Image (cartoon, rainbow, N blue to C red; front, side, top):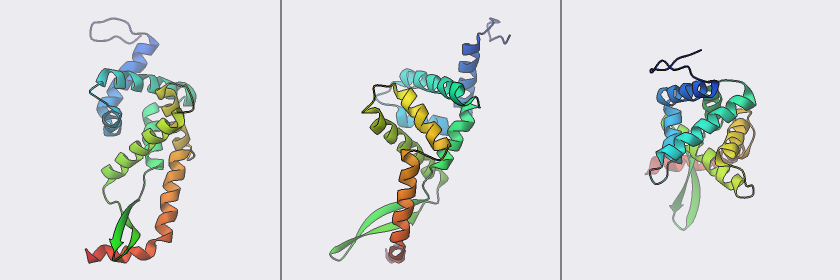
Length: 169
């Protein structure tokens, strides 16, 4: 049995929660996820949701949940940003390549949270359950967020002639 700082034996759930706390400190993606989920300074609520999410992912996939989360975020990261620009009287969609990996991660996490909220409106599930299902779908390369990434890619391909306007700023 594993013991904590006070030399008390920990149960399996406490061990998993302790591992989760170590993961939170280790991975900046999870910290960014906490930041994006945080509303009105309710850090305890967000951390408890993430602990439940960690246990949910552990029971569903039987893999390391931090690996699942990182892989899901990497699967749905956008490579282009769409920006509307007016030239004369017409407005065009101008694709821009995202160089910064932190911006890609930010948008991927934001898209995951938004798709969870839209999916949750019809269901009466908990946030962590629907968010966990969305992460599992992103991990497998399916889901609303992956579709959104593919839609952005198709819009970029259809508007690739507008990339030339980027250099005229």
